[in-house]
Length: 209
Image (cartoon, rainbow, N blue to C red; front, side, top):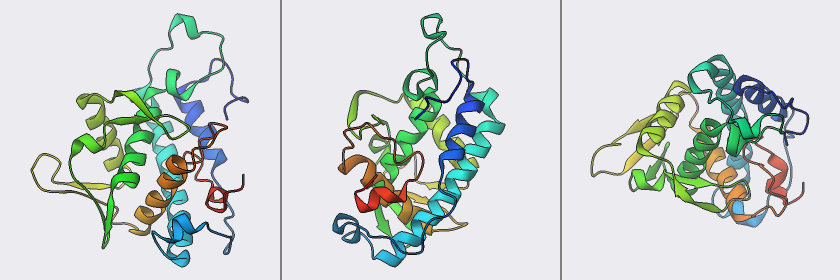
């Protein structure tokens, strides 16, 4: 998905590139596989995907604006090679994984997604939806959560024995979209290693790309 990026692309460049991949004209009606309608009804799913696309617009905008805080110098061995999100932009890779974990493991309850504990968030999710053997460190996980908070997400009970509650007060429908797109990325297991989540590709819900 990054074949058009310069080999010297920065985090800001990648954020802007991903932002440009987001859908700008999502149809009012498109087929949705039963695996998703078992989670929510079609009307709420479509509303949630539009809300998630708007959230991701903000996500990439803020990431580009604050890129200097999250930039990691590219290793000498990577110079001159096509940029890789997993290798060259770990902050995007980790924060995407946190979002996927929130959506995939979170239980919809009213206007919140409920999670059992922080350990449900530190798994790194590869682009084909599989779990990596390595984990996101506690420090990096909190950096991701702080950034998501800057994007408008709210996290309650992070350091208690109670269920973690994730909300998005500006538009709770974002959480439905997050739940659905996380399932699309993880359960459909795209053999092309397609990052459908990062570009909020509603076509994945029809099983056709």
